[in-house]
Length: 351
Length: 261
Image 1 (cartoon, each protein chain N blue to C red):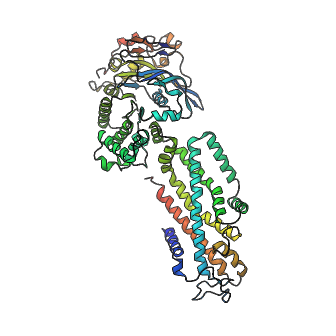
Image 2 (cartoon, one colour; image 1 turned 30 degrees about the vertical axis):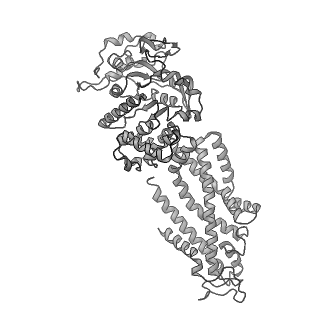
Image 3 (cartoon, rainbow over the protein chains, first blue to last red; image 1 turned 90 degrees about the vertical axis):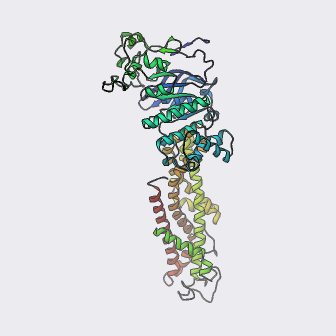
């Protein structure tokens, strides 16, 4: 119960109680993308903290800025995008102030990334073993033989059968699940403190998805690695993460523990997300879709960005930009009238 | 396939030249000038009494050796500059591509001939001239391929692993894009052979008395009405070699295009 939550222009900087100094702290991050049709405000004042060994989920629909946020943290934005404001503090060092060669020393040994499509994220003409060994070779100062040895060991750890033989295979000779295991091995290869996952199981079968998630959580728990887990799949978040941030139109609209957010949403958008997920106990119940479509981030709606699609919207929602308000410790919402969501039972809340 | 057979036969004959013919290509025999083809001299002799068949083989050795070496320099230079331009973009790309535009603005042969003329005749000048003029095609090809490839997720993944730009270019991008440059190199050899023969024909390339197809065509010209084989045979050799290499290039392209692995 230490530092007070300071309130920036776009909401409080979240310092979790009892967490001490977080491993990663994103403060008021703004990312803009220049396009022909105008400037897209892909990430618009996002603050997020991840403690050591903690898994934080970020959910939101396509185009809500989740992936751009991850790439901004890694310092790997596409050339047309840039960070216009904000900080990304990893162990107190502001990554936005570092140049590419300084960042290169951190990418791999301090933070790593796992991608959605393992087939396209692996080099098609390079054998799998050398791809895993490359990180240790470059960052850990290992020789060729030692790096190869480490790659074999990693392949064993992520459950690739017969690693000695698979070492010389090409990515296309692996199944989707095995490829994602390779990606995890690459991400873990230099023992990073933080792994950023960009929908790592979306491209996989449900059964494989479960295996991969179990593997990932187990390995991260063993090594005390923190996770940021971006997805649009709520059950996956519930399985992997302790805390959850909901993103909508480039902003975080709600934050809290996974349990709290999924069972008692405090934002109409989260409520809509939870209610639109299918429920095993009521398989015939029709899903409640959120009406409308995500707003343009070139000319976002005035006031609350969700108000055109919100059934609770009031007059003030169209004019006042709602700040991310702390409700209680670790719990925050960016809804002016969040009380109204409390009366609605989120279907499929028992997760 | 046909290309491989043609080039295979030609290469075998050139390499085995000392076994196939017992005549030294440079030895003059003024008692036996301008002989017609016979059992002794399969293709006759030239105005200095040198065996034409022997000169054809040894000349081919020179021309093909220079062509195969000459293709490597522009290949390497163009690939490096093309990758740098494509990967980094921005002003580096601008600079390199404007250089390419300047070179491309001149016809290939005009520029080669002008360069060799300035540098002075000889093998070294040929290498320099072909490199300075030939790299542009490789640079364009590789740059285009890199522009597409660098948008692939595996490049982002490699960057997220903290690999340096050099390493990403050399180990991740180049192996994915180099096939196109290799295919082009096969047809580029043909152009290089033509350039070497042309230069020698003009007296700017291989210097006499060293045998070479260009010089042979040029020397034989004076006797075209009486001894047509002196000019026609080396000319045919150029055509057949070029055809064979082009066929190999086409075959290679078909082989490599459908799949990458």
